[in-house]
Length: 505
Ligand code: NAP
Ligand code: MG
Figure 1 (cartoon, rainbow, N blue to C red):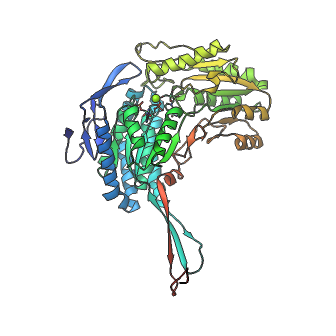
Figure 2 (cartoon, rainbow, N blue to C red):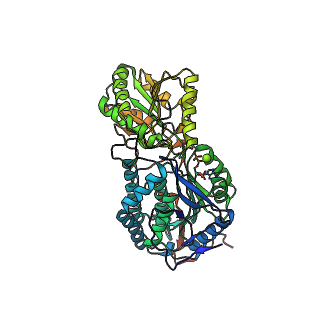
Figure 3 (cartoon, rainbow, N blue to C red):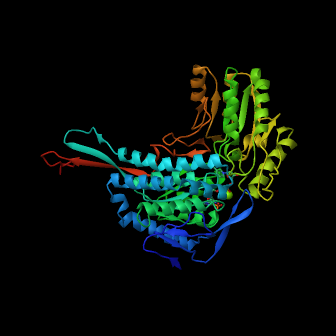
């Protein structure tokens, strides 16, 4: 294997033509010499050449992570020192904020405001865990006299972290920050469509002082690199964000060696507008809820339920504002929706719209590929509203993962709760009402990990993010995440003056 070894990983331009694997603190080429191309989906043009990891590269990365964990200093650092390094990562990211935003836009096609918000959140995730880890500790427990028991939190070990393309940098931060704060070593497998910002983030980790082998990146096909990581006997934990079918596959493979598994999977989140809602706030929040990130969000509020008394009033405004949303140069401040991630994903979205039409639904707005001037070879889809739907339709039941909302009306609270929960998923949900009692009742009854009450946002650093049912399990972005990257060790000791002889022999 050829390597590009330097004493210390030098700081390179973030935007470049060529990105390496990161293994054991070195930029490396693939053991096969093979590469793949990553594209700018807004233009359809090639962006950069990426090393394509192989099974041999996975093995190298696992051994590097294993060695860093078993024999290295990272988990043995005083917690304050690990915390300082996390803050340093955030500081470097802040100082290179514009470059990171540019790179994220170029690789994902997302709008400037979306990319800015997500890169800022990635930074704040490191700051959050830099603080949170200092207070993460065990307990002294009540036990019978003569005995003493304390618990301590110890890092889980080597973590494989497989991430998707919809929030490439933010997902890398959600995974890396709590894991390394806890003292684990990680191997990141970025999505093949969007590998560059995770690679750059690993480089920044090294620049900030993370020791060699603690943060590794192996890009390459999920069916090769992801699959091998999910099965590898020396990997202690797999954390995955992506589709529900791939999550199930990973869980099955991980079960062979009983790896710890956390899964953040798909969703079909309901958005409920009650008759007493502030209609303007609900319209604006619902627009954001479905069209943010061009609908490519696991918690996109893609099923809209509107009380029949306000249906027409709400829909008039919702349709009017949807038509005002702009698609265009992702770098323009005024652009609301960026591109779709790939031609394949665009076909999937359009297939769902076509299937709804075939099943008798009505496309009220959008419903087709968009033509964007200057971006003719990119992948664009019109913001789409579908009405006249029934709960059995594919487009109502399944995750579309694009800018498409299905709209239904309801007549009472009980009925809408039942419909909202009529899904295999349970990730996000939103309620719009001025009645605090109703908000609390409905929040209690909804089967979802996240309930937004009169609120367009689903997460901040510190708020738990994760799902019920087939949306997965485990919570990210919060204090509880640290428990998922640590084991609890119970230490029981006896301090009595007389020896104990339980068998009495
Ligand atoms: P996916 O298959 O779940 O991919 C997510 C990640 O898993 C990528 O890094 C992928 O690598 C990797 N992967 C794929 N197959 C794997 C395997 N057998 N073992 C281990 N890792 C594997 O998602 P997708 O194919 O990109 O998108 C399909 C659908 O998933 C979308 O239409 C959307 O509905 C859903 N999705 C959900 C989320 C979410 O946040 N919940 C995010 C993205 C997509 P490669 O990139 O190399 O394939
Ligand atoms: Mg896939």
